[in-house]
Every structure is written in structure tokens, then in C-alpha cells.
Image (cartoon, rainbow, N blue to C red; front, side):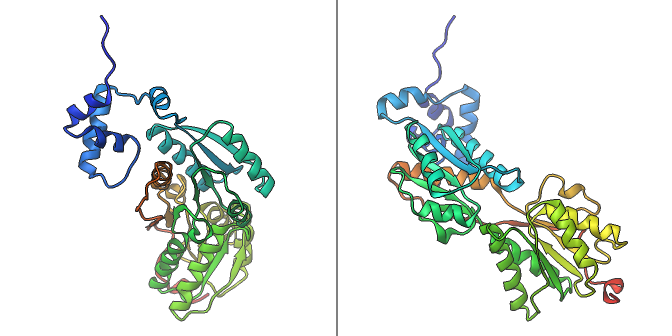
Length: 339
């Protein structure tokens, strides 16, 4: 016995919606009620429906392929963004071709775009984390829609990202509310846009509260650089708290404090950024800022898909981060006051 594979009309009938609504859900379009989206997704799962991208390509003369350009990095944030963009593209019915660059220059970016264009991509997502990459992107015209994923939306015509400044601001505000008046910051590399946005958020929160800015220590995202910063902080009697620009550096800093006989949070409160998988299992569990990478990927593809269709996408481009409160940050206590 044979059965006919389900088609979009079957999904629409089971979900009780129109053919157009099913299409919008499949393509990740916005402005669909969550309950409607859930019904359509349940019908797709129940029927085992799979969009026929080959047939769609024949009808529309479109490749149903997008390109993703990223920089080589072992870092949690950029890798998480790349994975979620790939997942969102697949869920929207696109194939994704990826290019990873060791360094981003005007020439390497041009070569990457040329490589993707030979695959007939309909659009490109660029995951940019450094000033040089954004400057190179601004000089490019790939001839297809281009969406940049990063946290400084002023640097690209069409961009989506987590509000890095807001996350750092909220992290610092938490420490201020806990009574800390001298709050250090371990920032990320100078070349990274996200590091600069987080530093600015820390500084703005301190200035708004009428507190002195500093000390400021430079890191490179690695636990070792956090360890080095921690060794420097041990010899500074002023700070009672530190906002660290990512969780990996916070791990190294905690190690340096422990070796110096200082405890977290009794002697030093710490807030990180990213909410890496290990953050909640540290001793003590790390207070940190969580980035919604899944929403970043979904929104980037929704914006790109709308651009491919020649439509405007009215989704907010900046995604709010979430402050996760754990036990590495506490009010200023007697031991801290004596420092």
C-alpha cells in the first residue's frame, strides 16, 4: 500500500487555518498568534509534513538557500549564534551554506560573498563581532539581502542582536543596588564591538549613580585573562564587586580570588555575561546575563526572509537580555567593609 505525502493544504485543514497562514509559519514570518503557530506546528508534526523545497525552487526559480558568514572562534557566544541561525534557517525551509573566516578583511569578505553567490544564495547572514568586520561589511554590496547579527545596530543597514549595553547596565545596576560603590570591570578585547558595548553599559550605570568609574582591566575572553585580572584585583583594596564581560573570564577571576584566600561573594561579588552551561554549576553559582540566542537566530532569519520577499519586517531588532541572579553577588557585608 502506498500513501500520498501530505501537502500544505492538509496541514491547513488539520490546523484549521488558511494555506497562507501555514506558509507564513513555515517561513518563520512574524505577527502570528502563538496559539495559531502552535496549532500549525502540531499539525506539521502529526502529518509528518515536509516542505518540498525542490518543487518550490522550480516554481519560483529560487534556490531556497541562504549563506552564513562567521569568524572562526571557539567562543560560546558567536558559536551559539551560528548554530541558532542555522537551525532557524532550516525551520524556515532554507538550506544554509556557511563560510568561516579566520580574519575579516575587505578581500576575505568579498571572497566569501563570491563563494556564496556561486551557490545562488537568496540572502546572507553575517555574524559580526569585531569593528573591522563591520567596517568591511559596510563597503560591500552583495546584490542580495544581507542581515548582520551583532549588538551595535548603528553599524549596519539591517542588523539584529542582543542589547549588549542593556545587559551590562543591568548587571552593574544590580551590584549598585546591593550596596557596592566600587565596582571593577574586566572588559573583552578592544577590537570587539560587544566588549565595547558592555564596557559602556557598566560605565553609564556607574555615572548615573554618581559613582567613580574604575578600575578597568583588559581581558581577551579567556579564563586565563580573567585569572590575570583577578590577580591584579587582589592587590587593590578598593573594589568590592566586579562585572566581568563574559563567564569564561569570570571563571578565571574566581580561581585567582580563591588562591588569594578570598571568597565569593563574601569578599568580592561577581557578575558575568552569557550564562554559559557551566555558570550555574560553579561554586558559588554565577550571577550572569543570559543572551537569548534562539531568538537571535529566529529573528535574523525572519528579517532576512522578509527582505528576500521584498517586504518590511517590523520586529524589534534589539533583543532584551535577561539578568540571572544566583549566589555570586550579594550585599556588601562586614568583611567587605573592612577591606
